Length: 278
Image: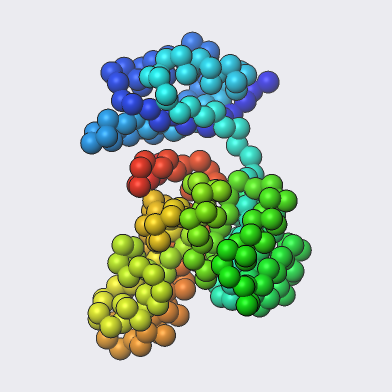
């Protein structure tokens, strides 16, 4: 039976890596549909994403690939399938709504397990798509107590990624440590500029000529995780900060959707605090 898999490899760079890896595919009679590779010369690291088809056992293929790459290599042989995601939001609907519409249209290679929110504002929107909406109020609660409730809910769900679709609460280091490289955030600024709250006010006060958005993995350093995708649009002196905010929402939802598609299709490698995107 013919299989189709994504082979992802990252390891220390060494001579002949592409040859040895390709030879494994050739010896097994596999067809290389697509292939991309990159060498980070500063760190001496090699990255490769290959899609292959043919008759093979995925575990056996992985074991053979491990045998021809350097020790401590990270080798993944992934059978393409819909990943599971949990969305987290607060009150703004543009990013959440865009993802839900893409999912309903079959454009998102993911199953949405639930929407979790610290506010009840987005319940009606979510329920229109028959997605479970879980309201975990943050009113009159310390962050630690609220996050404990959220973690209890998440522990009862099965998912690959958490997507912060304008979830307007800062996550603690303890929370983030539970899900390394699994939390994707959309930040309403072209990072590293204007970190933190009210970036549109910051941008307006500086008289910027472009505004943008950044999708990144969440780490314990606020808004400093590895960047997945970014984009910008032009603005001018005629716009007040609220005008910039309205214009920026279109960029935010596009950038988040693009980043999510890249991650769901296994096109993103985390390389220290940067990403390699194929």
